[in-house]
Amino acid sequence: MRAAGRPAEEAWALAAASGQSRRTSRALCCTASRSLRSRRPGPDGAQPSRNYERKENMLRLEHAWTWLAVTVGALLGVTPSASRDLSGSRPNILLLMADDFGIGDIGCYGNDTIRTPNIDRLARDGVMLTQHLAAASVCTPSRAAFLTGRYPLRSGMVSSNGYRVLQWTGVSGGLPTNETTFAKILKDRGYATGLIGKWHLGLNCESSNDHCHHPLNHGFDHFYGMPFSMMGDCVRWELSEKRAGSWTPVIWSTMAAIFLFTTSYFLGDLIVHADCFLMRNHTITEQPMHFPRTTSLILKEVSSFIQRNKQTPFLLFVSFLHVHTPLITTEKFRGKSVHGLYGDNTEEMDWMLGKILDTLDTEGLTNSTLVYFTSDHGGSLESRLRNNQYGGSNGIYKGGKGMGGWEGGIRVPGIFRWPGVLPAGRVIHEPTSLMDVFPTVVQLGGGEVPQDRVIDGRDMLPLLLGTAQHSDHEFLLHYCENFLHAVRWHQRDGGRLWKVHYTTPVFHPHGAGACYGRGVCPCFGDQVAHHDPPLLFDLSRDPSEVHALTPDTEPAFYRVMDTISRAVEEHRRTLRPVPVQLDAPGNIWKPWLQPCCGPFPLCWCDRENGQA
Image (cartoon, rainbow, N blue to C red; front, side):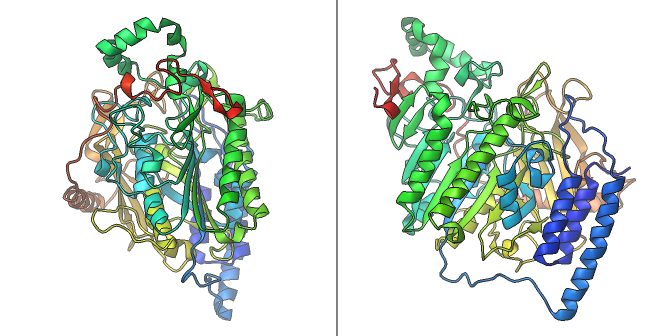
């Protein structure tokens, strides 16, 4: 039985193997994308049936033309190459990251029902990665790994008790100050560094203004945005992401109880004021946020940063608030998508991306800027209420946000564009990671990768340029909190991509494709299944992880298991004990750490309009 999405995988594989011309590669990429167009999954996570016959015939025709082009190219001695020497080149670096964005919701990755023309344009003009992976399937640990190039376990940005992400702004946990981000390194190399949008990696340690975890303490010259994250509570959303368990320590905290009692008028808006506010550098500018203008404020800040720093190299990380619930969408885009509020929010984010690219064009910076687009992890399947789906689609991939090692939670878009340097229309099928951005941009910016710690990311530039055939990643590990759930092995000599699952979440209800009713799948306890022997999949043939292999069906079963087991042991020998940042008490709300722009607890201001 043919796995869902197989024609697209076959077309991408043919494109990668053949090394055809830009025009042929681009045409084949478009055909592959069309064959993967998603009709969004039903509540059980299953994909509706597709008729592949016509598309397969098209692919066979494309395949024939591809081999003709390759043969002619070989006879003429034509080989792909970078179009200019990179020695001494220090580009501007623009990093764009969506929040909770499903890979199945992008045109160039296969969706034809949500409009993403600007993301698709990036892919046409640049390099698209089809096996790009987050280091975690939830926000805080994934973003920590992105910034440091290290598994979040190494920096303590994990938990062991169910606190998957930072729960409040007023907590003491966060990205440790001894971690080195790419922003720190490039700032030392003369780059102007900025972060606009979501942070969600902590703020304070001992007081409400020590800013020990603040972006400005991690190498960014400029910060504007949310120090926390969009949460369902920000607009009294019907889907709340706050864990009920996180309230328990607050209720039993004496100081918190007194505070709550004496400020009862404030209780209805506690979460809105505590978490949903904007900062510029160390100053709160808007508490709580006025959401109808948030999108325009962010775009204005991006444009201002680029204009201020266009004469010197800059690193700008735009961390979108889209498409996390509560899906704050301006009136201009509401009701425009066939996929409800989630589709509206996605199309607005794509429009924002287009406006940012237009700014580069206007300032004459397009050819001197490396642009990268991704998501922090997969779409949230459990963001659903009754018949309304508020989370994204992960296409042909199983699972979603928070689900340990299933592909749907960790397979993310990865697109690079650098005109005149990176070949337009190139599609890469090698395993890559969000952690790889760290060494890639550090070395492009003239910095050096730290030698005093383990860096798990690998420089992607040779792969992007086409001067390297394979990724430097042979093994990639997939953690859920601090529990190892899965491992993949890229067997280069045989062209196989193996994936082993030691632990998987138990979906609910039985037969569903997610943990409905739980908010997010757990990492441990009686709601996960431990597999002995582990589940084995061949992702090169079964990217949807449908057909688990056994010793009876796969002759290499025990050899694969043994190879991966040795890799895990070698990895564990590189781990060192570090303080865990997301466990209690580092993840319990503390009133004395709560940022407030007025006399506490009167946290209200609107400095965007000159009010305080």
